[in-house]
Image (cartoon, rainbow over all chains, first blue to last red; front, side, top):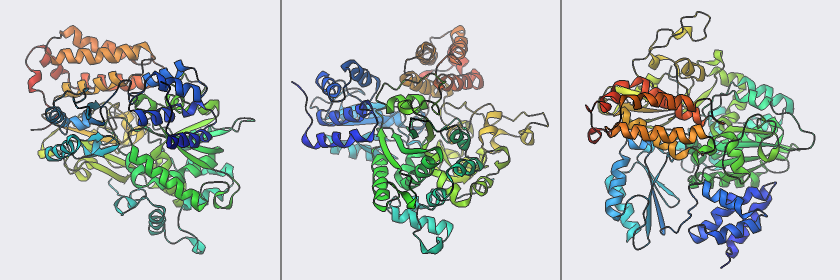
Length: 158
Length: 463
């Protein structure tokens, strides 16, 4: 089925285009708009973006496959990212990840059976001074303690 | 020498410090009441836009602002590369794709002092002859993007952005653009490709961005902190700003944000005059090493800068060397500057130090970083794509006790074959820290190969 944006997102797209001298420059922001709506990017979205921005579908597909944050497969309702890079690792991110895996009953890279949460590891999220940290959807949680992690995950899964 | 300042950070502690009202209040508190009872805000931009356009770059050069993104290139010199094009517009692009492991400074500016960025963009645009600035923010930083958008809306409402900022007929606009999760997009030409809606693969240079950058037009790419300190420099006078630094004489001026993280008691971001030493940063600012342990090593400015041991000394026996002043001194007692750290065999990088205490396994630390570079290599150049993967795999093998001495030695070859053989500096950014760990912790690597140490006992976090 062809993909279409909601009227509100369609207006966001209209506001986006005049910001750039080329239509192509709206490619990444538009893909974000589409992903916000559907959760992941499939071929219908690739066709839609290509059509709206006058680009070859292969160009859009190339962009989608380059960037980590474009989901090429369906994901859970909530996204949990645990930063695992050195400054966080020095402050105990391994323990945070283990706690998440145990509580959610899945490994990093997997989604809970009820489709609620996808757990992933992330490379440096620029919170080294407040490590360890995790990102839940669009929000950062920093200076994590086991109690805080427990509280965040309980809220997500209940 | 440790001297604190709060040109950028004064509003950090203020409630709603990111609003225009608080920004203007802070400028008045820092620099006194504005002349003629005018509004207190955006005073640097007012001053710059009151100057002849050609004088702005000349003035900016005097500030000796070294690029805050890692390479340390003088900002004013970079601006001077911009020449008016007969048909094409010019662009200012701000690099806020902060993602270098250990670096956490730009995010604090965007979240807590976004107006300094917008004001810096106005001055930068005017200086280089651009009318639009694009701020490229990594997608994960949603709060940063919201705060920047908020600041842009406030500045537009006041007329600071728009057709004639501060009564001068010179339109300026600022646009926030978002990435989609790629460390490589912090490399300037890769960032430009990403901004244009392409895969974020670095471009061959030349042509340099000043000749053909964003959308094929002359472009200056500045780090976000670099542009955020510009208003301060213009308000104080660029030469006076430069002189705040103890390294003013060797062309490294002003104040900057210093980060401290890893095994220290008080991690965080601090605004200090350039000239502070690593020892002061770690012990006086950072409160010392966790558990009062001894230090194993420190990565001075982001994971691509080679690790330093606390026992290292500076070697600059030549009396003509600008570094001779520190010849024979411990590396921890040398002022942190772009050139001083280069002389110490490492780099100042992004100026956010990661401290590792004794008890940390350096082999595991290197493995952590190599898996990062393996994941983030864009894959365009073979030596980097394959080399970063091999570095990751061989260090894994060493940790598992399955590697031979030949394989340990092969890490040097792999790293050396990446260096200089790639389009962008990511290759060096991978190989240099790898070689640093290998040279400085050779005995630890050998202990794993000989089976004297086991992975299950290796730790990064202190017990």
